[in-house]
Amino acid sequence: MDFKQILNELMYERGYTKYRLAKEVGCSQTTIANWLKGTNEPQSYMFERIASVFDVSPAYLKGESEIKKAPAQMGERDQDALLQIARTTMLVQEFEKLSPEDQNDFLAKLIVKTHNQADQDAQ
Image 1 (tube, rainbow, N blue to C red):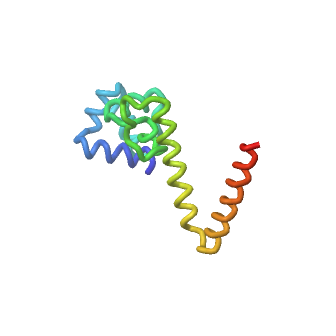
Image 2: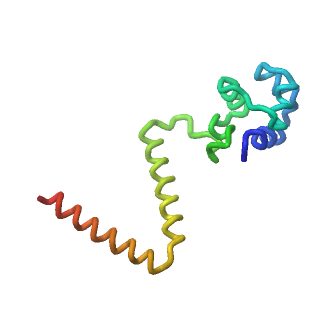
Image 3: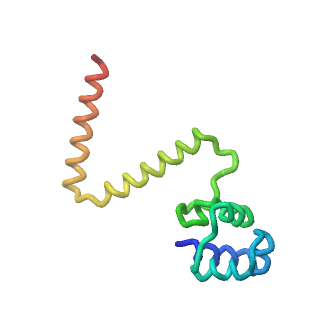
């Protein structure tokens, strides 16, 4: 989804009017209407304000992430772990698109590479 769709959805879900949102973020109702139509998008500082009002991340609001809000206490180490999980999930999805023969070939090559790496590490 893009920004205008996400903003429309958030406003609908939370019962916001253009007037209420404009008042809370400090802009005009016309500006909100233009965002909702997709005529223009907010400046970066305004994305932060809107995200704060709806308690979502700016990345979610911009359509760059499907995660509405990361846990508040998530540290850098946890963020790295979450990113690794996402990458692994994507890798599995790509692997599953391969034919059974290509999957077997890939696994065979991976086993050989892993053994070669273990031999190098042992030296």
